[in-house]
Length: 80
Image (cartoon, rainbow, N blue to C red; front, side):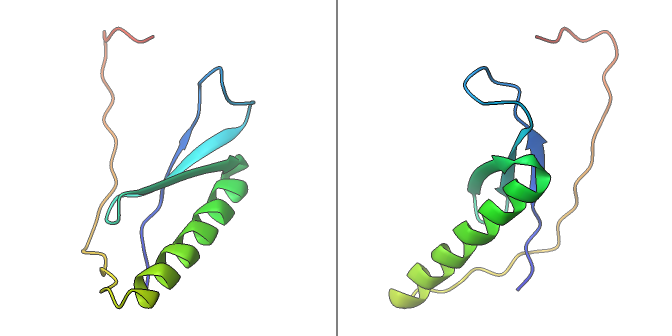
């Protein structure tokens, strides 16, 4: 199965530089890792464990619906 992963750079003081969130919207799963590759690897590990747990409990593994990712630029917005 294929799942869309959304990556977002973490700009929080609690995290070292170059950490990214990895989020699978269709499953509501979020993790993080160092750099994009680290975040992708962390999500792969999380998904592997998640699928194993679902199978062990006899639960259905949800297939992703068609999805799109977009962005919009706002001018004159206040940013922190």
